[in-house]
Length: 247
Ligand code: ZN
Image 1 (cartoon, rainbow, N blue to C red):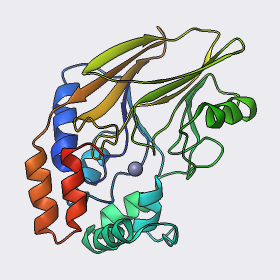
Image 2 (image 1 turned 90 degrees about the horizontal axis):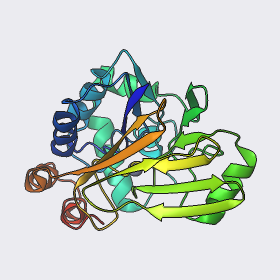
Image 3 (image 1 turned 90 degrees about the vertical axis):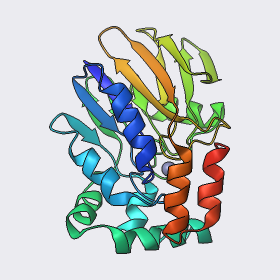
Image 4 (image 1 turned 45 degrees about the horizontal axis):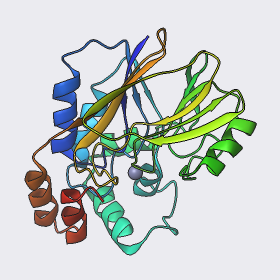
């Protein structure tokens, strides 16, 4: 199966559109969306509707922002900026889009034999996976060969091959990883709508599960247009500013 893997769009329509335009040139058997469709950005309805249009072979999980926006979680652990954006989003989503976001499943979700997706950690959907220590705990308690996750907004790869534990940040415009059939992997495609690895370009991945090949891509998009939309919506200006730095 050939998968297109998308995460953390965060209501950034210009970034999402650029990724969809680039990725559509190729053929995919299914699309995996790792959560946080909304929150931070100013185009929640466009992004949710574009995700809904990705079906029928679409697998999704919910993100922490999706939960706060739809009232599943109170947002008690959100900072002021994130909470303000979530409340703005709740008021902005159409009833149908709000229902769709509320119905996104909790991860992990198994997509095929040996492949799962989640937002944070497969052990807890809201937990960040940053370090080799985090990965080690998951490898010892979650027996899945390949898991794609989001939440940190940092394109990265954690692997366990034999007794060797490794971690790598995935940099550059594009790249390719050949997975070892005997290894186990936790893979983050990075964020489309709010990258945080000091590269402001939208980030996504593809995965060929038959060949064990992961590819990552960075795509330029009209950042100033997303920023203008955020400022015009009355959202906190820091949400616009940070897009230029990828931070
Ligand atoms: Zn996120």
